[in-house]
Image (tube, rainbow over all chains, first blue to last red; front, side, top):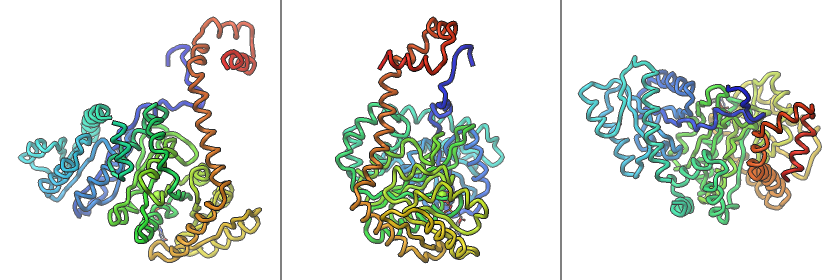
Length: 156
Length: 311
Ligand SMILES: Nc1nc2c(ncn2[C@@H]2O[C@H](COP(=O)(O)OP(=O)(O)OP(=O)(O)O)[C@@H](O)[C@H]2O)c(=O)[nH]1
Ligand SMILES: [Mg+2]
């Protein structure tokens, strides 16, 4: 802190002046592995984000409805069962259908390299495999959140 | 922009409701928020606000899922707001209440929003008062608010909710005394959840006895046992909520007390807003601060003098 500059007593909430990134973590489809996503949820929280952890959201409709209700900045989708080309696409399509342009979609899971450009074209970025450093994922989420925040404040 | 947001809210459009909540959450006392609330206020006042409070893990979210289903099946429109604590160190938060109610939310199309308290103690989030108004104006018959679950710190809910449901249960051990110390006065209905667990009847008796020793007003807070695994007791709970609703409608002093508190909050804010510039000008004035120090003026007198000057 600079010399002579003081904090307002009792209102020492500098942390809360910046609004935290709000993110929904979802595992669409019936895919039992829940532990990995909880580890991610905690890492995002510790990075200062507000993390909606909704457990299993079986359908893409549920993912999109939840993202809208919670007005998140980013939806992080994770799938380990190889169904990403259908399930991720459905989420992206539904977002478009509902006219939602200011929520970013980030993917992760076991995704073959060949699929990544296709996902990117749908607006689903990241697409990190298991074992990716969490800091890499967090940086990417911050970047995407910043992009959609600009859209949000432009639309307000 | 505000016009389309307002009409979206009146039409019950989830995106409009949701975006409006984001605005009140992030832009606290901006003019946008003031104008928004002014616009929607005429349509508020119909929802019954039910606060659900109690220690962590007692079953609040699970209960809300069941209440949502039952009320929706009666044709009522229900909305939910659940608050979690923000970490004071990182500002981050894990908002996990949704998991326990998701099935019911999906099935009945219930709007549900998770909020982080962003450093506000008292179990609520600063923006909750305005959030509730948005949901009210959107046509909710019931708005259910789940507090942080920090027991004693949740007393604020009695300034927001029309009916406060305090949830307790077996297995709280010695902690129960500390929890009770703050929370007994604010409950309009007491729930013992997890009636399927050992010690539930003892917990129920304990609460009944504590209530019997308290000074009683016209409304005598009832105690109801719930088993949230199979739904036992819920008919009675809904009936009690309904009875308390009727009671509060017939007793305007409840709404008066709530409005008084909200007004107090806004007057504090308004006063700060009005004098903020003057005060910060004075605080930035080096020669004045130096003079206080040189003259060894005590801070009480200095502050009194300053307020006298600007008010
Ligand atoms: N046996 C039993 N378990 C219950 C009952 N109600 C809830 N639970 C379980 O209690 C745990 C906590 O339930 P929640 O609904 O998340 O409790 P909460 O009070 O919302 O918790 P926080 O929001 O974390 O404070 C879950 O594992 C529930 O399945 C009940 O009536 N009986
Ligand atoms: Mg909960």
